[in-house]
Amino acid sequence: MNLRMYVLFSSAVVSASIMPGADLASYRNFRLGMSVEEVGKQAQIAVPEAKLISSRPERIEALDWRINWMPPATVRSDPFKELLFSFYNGELFEITVTYDPDQTRGLIDADMIEAISGVYGSATRPVAAEMSFNSGYSKTVKVIARWEDEQCVLSLVRLSYEAGFGMVMSSRSVKMMAERAILESERLDHAEAPQRELALRAKQLADAQATDQKARVLNKAGFRP
Image 1 (cartoon, one colour):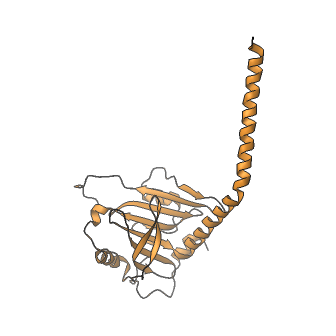
Image 2 (cartoon, helix red, strand yellow):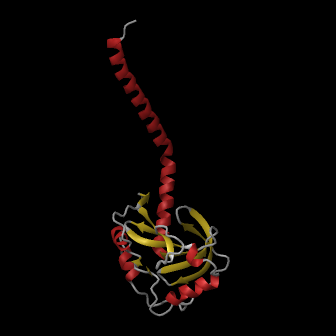
């Protein structure tokens, strides 16, 4: 079963904390399982260029969409300043939301939980939970609340910088596969590093020798002591 089918599949057993009809696979007009092209079209990105994170053993990509800066007095309909979309073999498995600090200034944890609960139902408060939050760089953040079912999990986090908030929506199983694939890619890169270094040195030596040989041919013909 591919990711698109997976996130569309409705489980008969759903967490009691989730509001009936709440869809933890969708954030606004984006849905887990979308392709890079579909996400780019929805975000109105002319040419969506996803950054390659890993190409083996599985293809992991990320598409970063930053909202253009606007003056503080400008009214905006979108509460976020950045969305980071993560793809596993071409299908969206995680959405990382960084909220605009100007639009969340003064709000406390309870305010954010109340707002998100209005869409996804009652939340659970994790005890001393932390998670990695990718928004241009990796950082560990505090999880304030969670909404989850058997397929997906949504985490509200507090960011240490700008005293802001963020949210992460992801497919449980696919995120696990992506994390394993990234670790395996790093292991392969580390194991192959010595051989790559030797190959690079050999190429640099061959290139230097070829340059010297070309210079020798030219200089020998024209050199006059």
